[in-house]
Image (tube, rainbow, N blue to C red; front, top):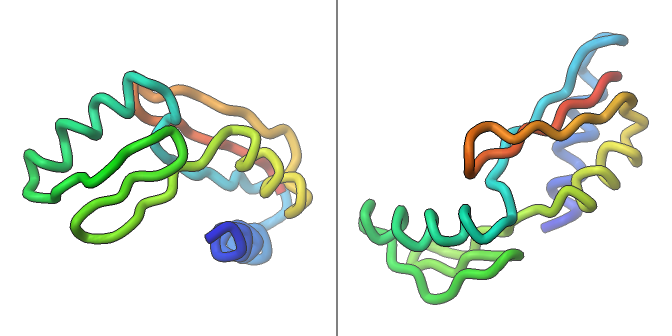
Length: 99
């Protein structure tokens, strides 16, 4: 849930030293990643019921996907500065902010 995501980032920011980087790596929310995940999950024995830009419903549960806009809002609420988004290959996204 969004409350859990925000509380996780708040805790990371709370325990970090001033000037430290807070980095989160997540799936990109683009079509290339969606297609990759459609192939990945069944290959590892996890059935996919539905998949969209926002969430993946699998035989193991629901996995939320996070947009850059949502991540930026979390970092803003945690007073993190100099937020950058970096694509890591074709399916991963790193979000970097400074305390």
